[in-house]
Amino acid sequence: MAQHNPWPDEGNTGHIWDEDLRELDNPPPLWWMLSFYAGFIMIVFYSLYYPTIPLTDGTGEFTKGMAEWTQVEEYHDDYAVLKDWRKAKFADKEEKLAALSVDEIIKDDDLRSYAVATSKVLFGDYCAACHGAGGQGNPNFPVLADDDWLWGGKPAQIEASLVNGRIGNMPAKGMMGNLNEQEISDVADYVIALSEGKGDDAAYAAGKAVYTKGMCMACHGPAGKPLAPAGAANLTDQVWRFSSDRAEVINVITNGVNVKKDGQYIAGTKQAVMPSFKERLPNADVNIKRLTVYVHALGGGQ
Ligand code: HEC
Ligand code: HEC
Image 1 (cartoon, rainbow, N blue to C red):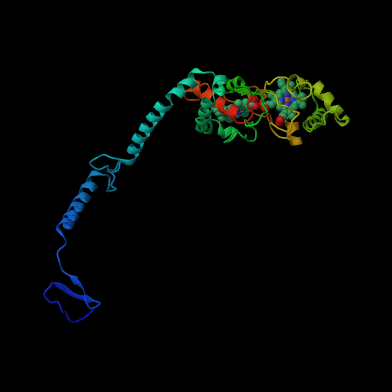
Image 2 (image 1 turned 90 degrees about the vertical axis):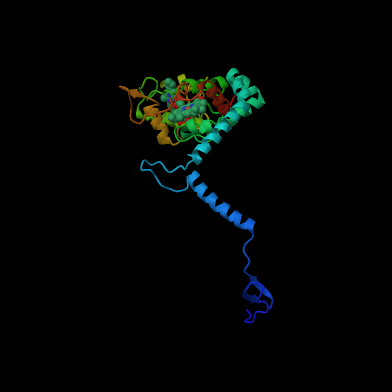
């Protein structure tokens, strides 16, 4: 900064850099000042019009400003618009879902993909807690994503599982409830051998005889594979409804599944109830079909 001011009359502030770079003392342009005042007025207006000052009126309601505007309301309004738009856009598909049978929906590629895509949230809300997010099952809740079915994987069977619910029943200690501990231990070994494909080994002859005595075949079929799906597990595969652990197998045979006495579950019995969704789902007529298509498409549909 130089001390000497060679331009005393031009209204500079006396600040000079690099020999001739001066700071002048001109008023700002009019347009700039007008914008400045307009901005200030806008701030006042904005503060009054929109919810700016975070005061409550004591009831938990916040100041909403003169416009009574809230972000949440705007969100709800926009969401309603989006919903209406979606409804209009997919109205024909929803109508078709309502009108067609599950078999017909599955045959229509476009409609099937639509049903599957729109099922994910529903499945998450109503089914995943028990069956896992992708139908992969949870301890004591069956896998829906494989081809091992208790009640059948045909569309009509899956639909019936959803509409009416399902309750598997297996009596404790064989059909007549008369198997002793030794017999139960033998038949448990036989059942485990069945799942490993060794059911015909001589070592398991005793258990095989108990299988006949306990009338296990009435539900599990003559060789461990149910003749028709009616809730009983297939004992010849590696897929365990409960557990392959020997102690657990013994427990299932000893205390059965859903066995009640005087209206109460007996100790140790497996509780396995699939609730009915006829009344539970919103818009159940269409949504049960939708979910049936979804479960059928999870991988094991027949
Ligand atoms: C409260 C837990 C629970 C909920 C919620 C639930 N399920 Fe189930 N589900 C079960 C149980 C337990 C079984 C097995 C019943 C049995 O062992 O007989 C089952 C069985 C089924 C079956 C028959 C499986 C087979 O192998 O044949 C289907 C299909 C099914 N559920 C679909 C669904 C769908 C879809 C939903 C959601 C709308 C749902 N479940 C919600 C507990 C549940
Ligand atoms: C009245 C029909 C019925 C009879 C009789 C019956 N079971 Fe079961 N059993 C079932 C049902 C139903 C299930 C599956 C329950 C479910 O998943 O809800 C089952 C499940 C099992 C399981 C568990 C399988 C797994 O994958 O975890 C074993 C083991 C078993 N039964 C063995 C036997 C043996 C051994 C006998 C004869 C002593 C027998 N059951 C008699 C209906 C029966």
